[in-house]
Each structure stands twice: as structure tokens, then as C-alpha cells.
Amino acid sequence: MTYFLEYTVPAAPGDTEFEFPHDEINSGTTVPLTQTDAEVVHTPDLPARTGIIGATVPEAKLEAEQLITHSRASEASLYFDPSNSLQAGVGTLVSTFTEGRGWQDAEDAQDVQGATF
Image 1 (cartoon, rainbow, N blue to C red):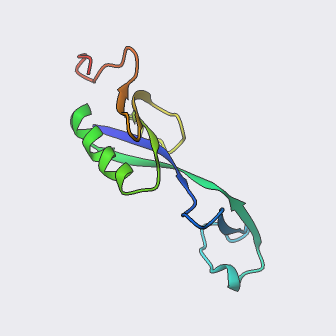
Image 2: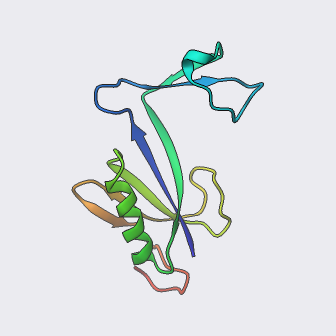
């Protein structure tokens, strides 16, 4: 089964924001800021949606928690999404994670076998 974890990565301590060039003509190209005259985009955080492989919800939660604890994120949402979409919010919300509180399952959430978790 494929799950997706959505979370937000804040800028590193000491940095107020991320900076990256935005060039519509050369999209997908990564260039150091000092080597481009493209418009520079500034943002205090970056949204992320990452695929999590797990056969069961507990396996997916374990894998997702490993990712969260090795990032600067403090909150995340776990979705079951058989469409494998990279769009935010797509799929069925399974559970949310908050640092210090752990996982909170979504109301009426069920795994693909029909059992609640």
C-alpha cells in the first residue's frame, strides 16, 4: 500500500527563510543563486509530500515517524492514496502527528481491509 506524508519544513535555525531562483523559462534547472539573474523567491517554510511505503497503517506510521524525527518538521499528516498523487491533500487522511503528542488517528478512519486502526 502507498501512503503519503505531508509536512512543512521550517527554515534552519539562524535562517529566516529559504531562497531559491524562479525561472519559468528554465524550469527544473538548479543553479546557485550567485550564478543566475532569475527572480529570487523567499519563503519561511517549504511544504513537502513524501511517499511512505507500508503494508499496514502501523508500518506506515513507523516509517513516517522516522522521517519526521529526522527533519525539522513538528507536525505531519499521513494519507492513504492509491492514486500516488503528488498533490497536497489527495487521498484519505489516516492520522496526524504532532511532536510531543504522537499520532492521532482521523475519525472514522479505516484501513483497506475495513478494520479501524
